[in-house]
Image: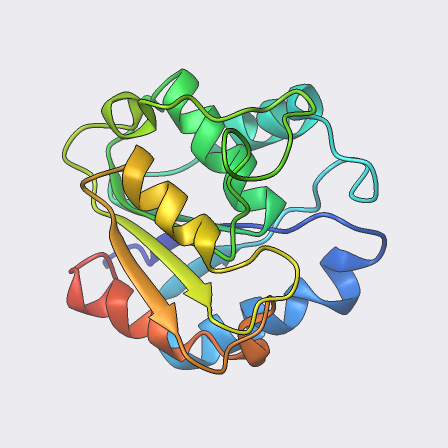
Length: 187
């Protein structure tokens, strides 16, 4: 019997985000991908006051439990910290894809640092050969779509998907994300 494809979803930051906001994104992803997926949605520590040290440690613990070919998805600040964590040290297992959703770019041109400024050579530090997808809504009032351009500059191999009409929560619809994961062979 084949094991289900693993998808690790890293939540965004803010009080109540895990249970009141990003759970809708995970539900959408589950519906859109259908059966045969093992979507993991761990609660990040101190979601209302994230630190790189605490969140990256939690992400590393989760990465250590994944099989080869797993897809990692990060929303908002969770995507930013996920990218930084992967750039700092690649996981032991080969990833199927890296997906960043409405992730603010922390560094020059984006948000100020606060402990997890992204390296300007982010693309060369991410695991080699792993497809990178950056999704950003054009109506994102939290992290403007210009952040997707900053990711494109720092990660030249990334495929940027700009979604007209989508807000920071992607209107609670990850259909485009699911379709990309399926097309890339990652699910």
